[in-house]
Length: 410
Length: 190
Image 1 (tube, rainbow over the protein chains, first blue to last red):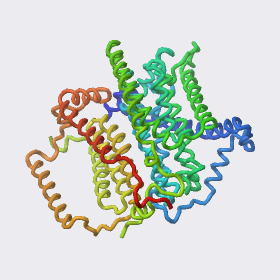
Image 2 (cartoon, rainbow over the protein chains, first blue to last red; image 1 turned 120 degrees about the horizontal axis):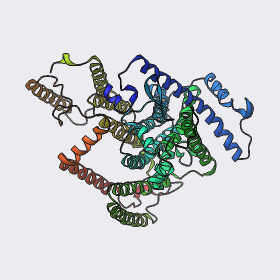
Image 3 (cartoon, each protein chain N blue to C red; image 1 turned 180 degrees about the horizontal axis):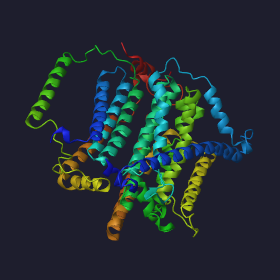
Image 4 (cartoon, each protein chain N blue to C red; image 1 turned 90 degrees about the vertical axis):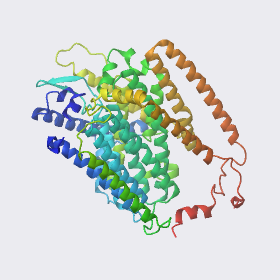
């Protein structure tokens, strides 16, 4: 076990002693506190920025510029009555919020927020954990967080949350493939799975950042798919207020709703940080020659970049209209997956030799053309009166058949 | 190798994994609600992932969670929710006549087979990996390399055959499921 830990984190190189445990504890506490503080500010920031973009005032009562509004809302939520619907599956209903919260916390533990410090003879990496399978753990956690949304919707025992959870599962499965493919591209170029070495490789200036080194395509694909994984606008069909009341958390109240709310913003921050780690060199940046303070500047760079992406998410929310469900599926399966798969093959080719790279590029281009031709043919086959689902006044499946499915217990 | 040679942490980890796997597996077949069964299946998969880590196959553990817990069980749940079969089913109904007896025979044969296999060797071999002749897998980076080179050299045929099988299954499923939509007679406008 110790060798497994030490293989990626130099902190455990001399065995696990009391000092090492203390350092880990401090790292976890500081990281957790920082994340919680950041979430509080993020909620306020999102409300304030959106209200500015929509020519409103937004929160203003509590504290300067309303910055304590989140605290007030949190207290209000705790004080509210905790309702469990009569039709709900009680155990799963109570479990679901934690299934959303825990992956959000674990993923943030992987993000390197600074360089390496030397404290009491130990090399301390400024990230909570650096497991050998680092970035795969992030993928696993994003897979697990689907369950929170799905089970919350299902266990509510109500129609709209159930629709929302079915949408959530389909959407997250669709975009996870493209997400995984871009991460494979990064792993190929890095030659390592740990987040620390992914950041290390990008350390040599802006031309070494993955966003430029891998071409802009993986970055764009990753940004789109991670937004879809987050269920944030413009991919928020899961909690589309105009169609589904509030989506999967319609039936939740009190602190359980608060946990969903918290986890959503925590995920936004964490994923901004993951984008920075994977594509923008994480804490990499210009370091002025100031004695004893050199370790501060990487943290500042990291915070600046992450704030940039957090703002971009707020901006998306204010500026972009929601995707229709079929457009969402089209984008995920027909565009992003072929694009990211092809780009991965091209990058792999160039990593071996330029000749292989150009060969691979031409092959991928050919298959993209063939694929889009196939999509066009499939599209034209579908058109026609019979193929389009009837709209209003007629169900795609007759009501008797649906009832046989849903009530057919006897 | 006798069990004495194991360190306490390894035994604890093994016990945790075993409890997770067994409780989850029993839950899958004994719980009445299909969604609860799927949740126990996730618990089993997590136990297997822990067992993989204990065998220093950490890459497999991560992939286990990503693929099985993160995608396949989600699809199970998707189908369960989509078809609306997520309610308690009567456990006493036998869709096939005499299936309980057949299942019992199957259990006896399986357990007897495992016992017969174990009778030949010691209960625990202590070997970290069969493919590397008992040498522990490399940690971290080496783990992926070992697995990659094994899959693409020694076991290439099995790997490609599996890939072909999956593609055939997908193409077959699409072919069976997709057909030109025509208006059914009982779908007349209301």
